Length: 342
Ligand code: PBG
Image 1 (tube, protein in one colour):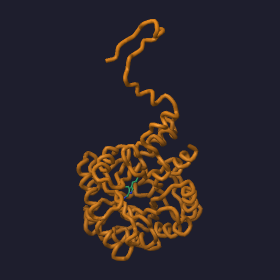
Image 2 (tube, helix red, strand yellow):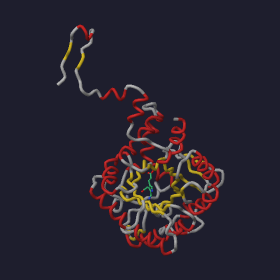
Image 3 (cartoon, helix red, strand yellow):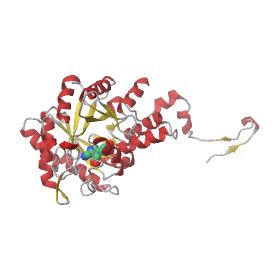
């Protein structure tokens, strides 16, 4: 127990006799650096990039200040810059022309679609950055769902067949990592088998293994233009935010079926899931700091309600502390620049 010593030798200050004073390790910058447990590095960052048709375009996304939709020429420039900052990989998301969206998401299978052209352009212009492509039909369907809609049902097995075709289309165009974000049952195994059958066994799979039916995807849907088209919601395939054990079962299935990396999404509100997945499976586990999380920080910063730069870095280090191998974040280039400045 601590005892008071109010004697004259303690001057006028009361002194506690404490065996442990944890503040000692925080008293200076050098000491804090010395005992720091986790570190964010540029190697932890994956940058999600929105694409749009055209030339010379860099269109603002209203609900995501500082985030743009790039035409291919501008995307290549922006991604070259990110690569030069050391960002290891980008994840591509197309805003498909409305005229090209249909009931079955046909444009997803077109070898000349925006994402395939981007893969080819990036593989030749920025060969040292990893290219991750999203497998889900929502940027291509008139109803905004990730799978095949029959009546009012997203039908699983027909969806998996379509997603396999989409994944092959992307892998043939040079995608390094296929990232299925659709949450259909059995898609990882089906995609793995199809890739292997074509000799594309070097293509990695990063599965959105535990993806929740979240309100935090709002700004993303604006960015890819599915906000106005989405019919209903995604709760018959994305997970219930109240569930945690179910996330472990989903991750187990995806790893069994051949996922090389798994992902938890959204990010900050789901760090408990990240931690459980890491401790249970010891597999490379990523978190997606989604559009709504980005928008929250930016909106508060724009109002002067918090220091945006510090909130950005604090949120990113939190993913590392939870055990994530890396983070998909719209902050990637800014965080990379901040890390470089030190
Ligand atoms: C689509 C997809 C979504 C996101 C990534 N891929 C949205 C959704 O499921 O509706 C969300 C990313 C974000 O909000 O930043 N399959």
